[in-house]
Image (cartoon, rainbow, N blue to C red):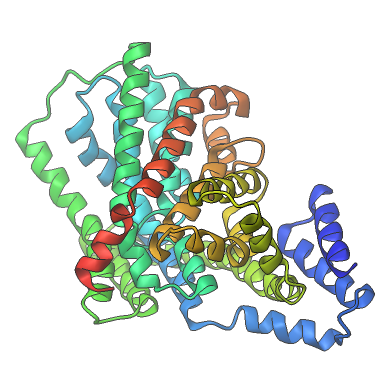
Length: 428
């Protein structure tokens, strides 16, 4: 009865469009009142406060703030110009430039939405101006925007580490090779689509002077992920302390090096970071009593027992877990989905043979596909707003990237060394 009230009220509120944080909070309160828990309402307040009371969560607003400062300081345009020197002369090269820019920017912003918005604002008009279909430009931007969650400053990986007790520094290091692999796969996909549709290429070679100037301009931005991971790997700083270093570095680069970061923009950058953080922290806080009720009512244990009782092979078990993540990813954003499902599915995945870091990366990547999949795909809404086109026009061009993403997840499951090699090498 208790679980029926919790899940039933949560599902109903979600279906009628109530924000996810309030769905979890109201469902928990209804369960306390009508269920058989015997708990006072004060317990709900205590659990809610405890959910947001973790020092490691401080890394989230700081990384977001660093990304906002870098973007306002002229980062995205510099990365794009450097990427165009490398990939621009390939058939459909701007599609590859789009992915490369998203990879680097995502390693700084740590947010898929920020990555998609910043890159899309520059790349979609540029690609449309050079003869690419606007819907394709929007599609490749939406897909490559997910690289923001598989990067050295990924907000989602920080959440995963907090939720599961996994080393955040280890997760950020473990994401490097998978992130590069996914980016390479998206680039190959973009090239194949470009060849089949005879997209344009840039036949004007760049001078060595232009290449050198743009390389020097992009270098400070490229060094930021090195600073963050180097400080963590070297034992100089924790992930939270590294995020503070990232803010100081971004400020100094924007003011002293790029000289494009006006002091007055600090307020808007901080406001944007705080607004995003507020949403995440509200979800984290209200998810704590919700998750506690699930645990007390033995939902994770029963789910694990049910899957184990199917007597399937470890591979089939992993496929079932990933299929559930994929279905939930269609309807929920990454943060809420991870908060709800991680306590239930992570122990099952580990028991089936996945390693801790591998599980974090695979879970994040699988849920991330939902960011560019209808009907709720956040990245799709962002690019549609930038490109001023409808969702279904973009979705047609997204099909190859859905296939590429599934292939990437399968490879990450089949080859644990892709996620475990670097953490083992650096001892994190």
